[in-house]
Length: 111
Image 1: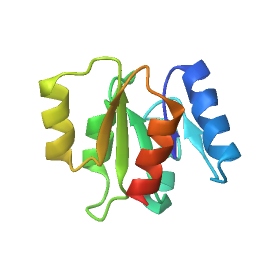
Image 2 (image 1 turned 90 degrees about the vertical axis):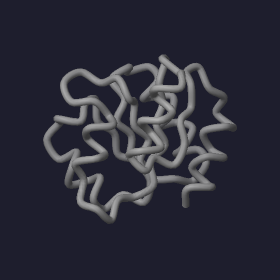
Image 3 (image 1 turned 45 degrees about the vertical axis):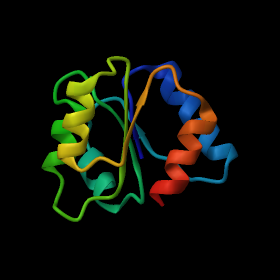
Image 4 (image 1 turned 60 degrees about the vertical axis):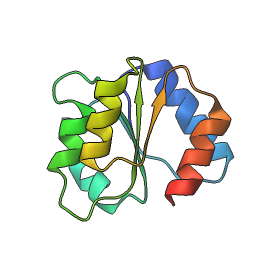
């Protein structure tokens, strides 16, 4: 599952994962209808930290306690975001722009 407000990046992630054999479902914000329901059954989440409305971290922390692994992405890499991702139980934080290979490696590692 992908939650990314940047349409171009969201489509690129969808294509990359699809070509690599993964099924995807995407949302533009954490508040999109069905996002929490899909997240509960997803095997892995790719979530932008900076989203309109609720942040990606707030969305992830609000999920029921047995959460799927999450790969967070952000254009604002730094110690504060890395610590927040670690506290939330996120799997990894990738700084934008990131290589497709790095994202695939993170997804495979999370699964």
